[in-house]
Image (cartoon, rainbow over all chains, first blue to last red; front, side, top):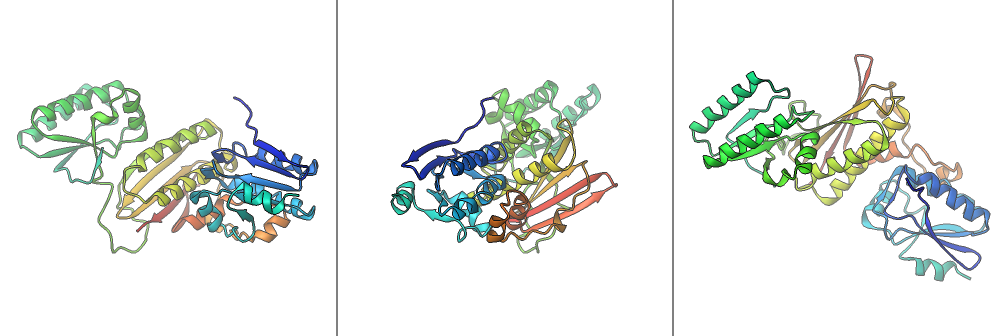
Length: 116
Length: 254
């Protein structure tokens, strides 16, 4: 079985855009944490998570972001969630995370807001 | 095709087929058909393990009913039966009934109604691939049942979180099986998960998730149960015979 890797694209020296695909659950949450951590260690202070393809966000997926966001924030950056589908938005609403996470309509809005 | 109809009579399809009970089944069917019932249901809720003999029996009954102008429905098909029918490309040949799956209880308070009959059952090995497959089967069962899309999504999430929690934390091996049962009432559904792992009372956990605190703690775990409780209308836990955990989750919709 091919190891899952998150689709990522860097923009400048401080921004990276991740697209985790259709699901973020126990099968790939660990790799998501590793990818976020690696990006943070490489100095990408703004990590944009493009959720346009994401149909299912399990608790492990939530944890992969919740467990890493403060590291970005302490470095003066953030993890920004964007293009969230209704079902994923529902999960974030249920968990009361919509005020805690930074959310934009799409990656372009996040890049415009946080880019250099 | 699922239909909201009320078959006039229901015949139980035996889980174990012997020459004796096959003959008995065929005799009962012939007797029922002689009384010119408009439709008939084959109660398949006992078919945990499906053999070619079961398929032959159902196919023969289907043809016999068709010859007599009577509609035959498969009632409460198990996940195993649905899988076999789809593999054999026979799923769309049969009609399926919601009678016995949707009880009229519109004014009833949300209680766990033990009078509801199981309308879906599965025995799921506790490995990731089997859980993923079982989830697909469960979603196939739900689709076409008239549930709102959001409710289906919430049930998917509940199923995933509970089975994954059992897989990861109950101590059972990947060869062990969880039992999964669904009971459906009028705009409500009860999911029951049974495993033979360590005692774990899902209702006694501290479920508060304070986002800022969780973020500061770098919290990655313990969110699943929070999700289950927030998505469900009622959750219960029972430890049975000092050997089985039974988690029952009830969900309503408008």
